[in-house]
Length: 308
Ligand SMILES: [Zn+2]
Image (tube, rainbow, N blue to C red; front, side, top):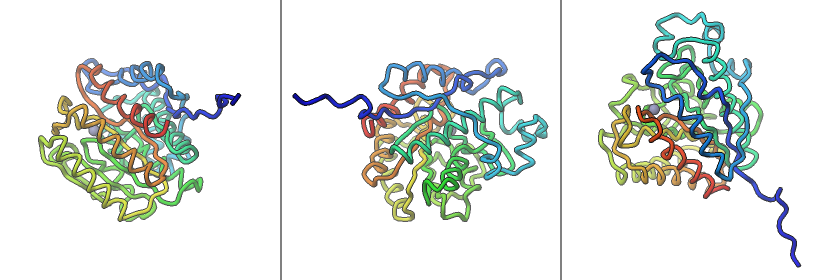
């Protein structure tokens, strides 16, 4: 009689998380949906995924991407008020610890993806963070820091950042301008934040009110162009759900099913080409933040169906 496969034969998808993701004292009425991370974690505990505790990013990893003075000011709480205001969070030790763990989680997800094919993290996608300036709830650019760390560790030689958050990945674009080892692709609502965009390697500006059909066709074309432009051996996917028709900060009209099909398209693009992919949850903004949970969960469901 044949033996059943040993449990070690099963590869559960690694998912990185830290309790600090939802631990931050914010002023009443603050826009940032802090609770969604803990709620996502609780929902994912009933999924067949391997939830791991994220370690913080190191100073050396931050300094590979950001200006030393900016890093020091942010870590020490001496950042000039106008720059802090652009970030949108009051400074606190909690904020820094939370950010370091979140950046660390993206790095670890990227590393695990290189080793196992796919990994995810429950927060991340801080694409508005520039070399010496944060913005739009983003302090350090976890995507570029993770890409740089994987290049430094020789896990890969070219990284493609696929940014499908409704907001343009201006920080990633400016950090990677002129580089060939990190390629940036951003599909975003043209009239949305940031008002001053930076040039990604490939930008697709979408009109207000775009629906599923137009979006998914445009995504297919953009992915085809991206894979003609470069031959990445790692993909970092920013899967913001603020493209949803119910999002309070998005201008697009994508349905829940449209988000599922979007995530599936990106994951399958990676899988069919044999390229490791690390996914981060990205943006999603609603006062009724509970409504964000099923939208974000689709990424984990599709990744499990594709790679689990
Ligand atoms: Zn966004």
